[in-house]
Length: 87
Image (cartoon, rainbow, N blue to C red; front, top):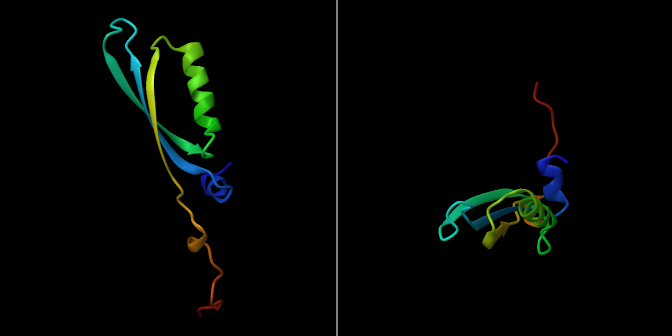
């Protein structure tokens, strides 16, 4: 789906700040920033990414902070008030 089309279906720009334990030094935390379009409040795209992380990556998750913003609101969409041709 194109980004504009996703936004029209209520996808929101979602940013997740992911803290995880470094595999070789478990007492240290590393930060990873993930960003994609997702549906709030369930965040299925982020959930799928975190499941992939748990299955495939060595760094154990510590915490995830989520911020989301609806980029297109009802006030942003409106019909054109004028249609004409320039000659």
